[in-house]
Image 1: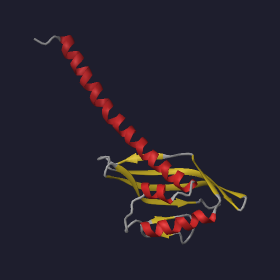
Image 2: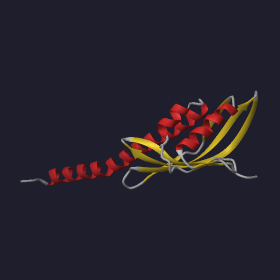
Image 3: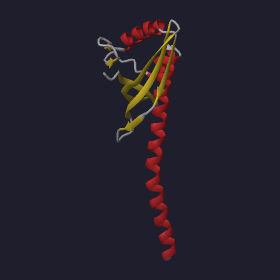
Image 4: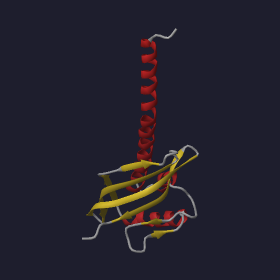
Length: 158
């Protein structure tokens, strides 16, 4: 025979277990997505196309917009070529994220993010600071790894 105390304890444990698990799992996934995004920033700072390659999808249908008017990439190969050239154009870069927000789809296999970043680029010993660069993107979980499938950066006018 089940006592009232046993039933109460069992129901309490079931409620606690089921209410905590999804949130913990979601926060863990968001943390892994944020780590991927930070690796992307790091790849730019280190001028490391190989690290960038690890976190980016290599789809020919990838479409990305950069900060310049004609900075449009319609495939991984275009993106890679453009960024190798960009790496040669600056001596050093620092990207400071200030407001990274990560969101997950219900099935947990797609994530999107929005961030406000401050950049410092050193070109021929001159530092150029660009604040409030908005970066948004979409990631997809592929073979247990998060890959950036779309990304956009823009500089506010004014």
